[in-house]
Length: 287
Image (tube, rainbow, N blue to C red; front, side):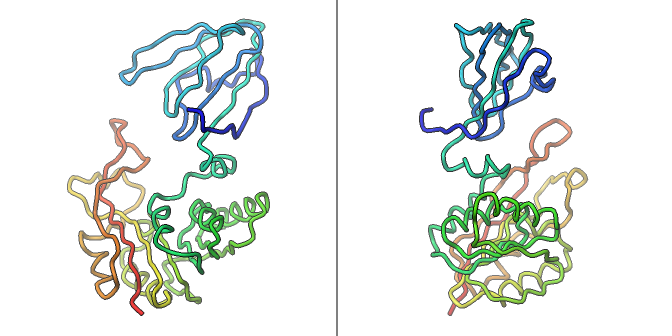
């Protein structure tokens, strides 16, 4: 792929400085290409197929490793005593900011929301480390990032300072208190409600609605009760019932609503990503 950019180059490694993790089976991250360059010496390299089959390669300065695609399992099997090599990471141009600052990509529904809205005063409710906040701010939205975790808020401030971004305000805020103070053109809450107290959900949503200006937007993504859901393996226990989220917005203009299957990054005992149904809502408050 030619339209990718290098976002990080690691220091040159010798035999005694290659991290042990790279000698074990591991994979390139989602959205990350890896390019290893042999500067001196030689190495044996293994790439694993989808079913664990192994393909072995021998690389040296005349026969360089190929650039590895995202999520390819591989390892350095052995190296010569005089090895010198260097690893660089690449990504799509639109992901460069997030890769540099250790953030995941903005949520796909937030990326869709901006096609329906214009920049305005926006609340990222349960912002985490700010992946959605930074995406919106770079498009000209005036963002408040609110999260209960002070470390997340500090991480946002650190990236703001490093990147010279000024149109994000931050605040430590407990969503369970459902006590917003300002009004907003847009309020988003993606994969957050499941970490809150179930008995507070209706009041939290009512508070979001009350603090959304006329013709403003709410975006919510959250899991709903799903048949055969492995409750004991999940890191949260707050689930909406099917149809519950759309019911809260019955008197709004619902621009998008579905309850489609999705996957958590967390895996089950068999190593498979846990599958749940997620409710997705984009709604506009009637004037």
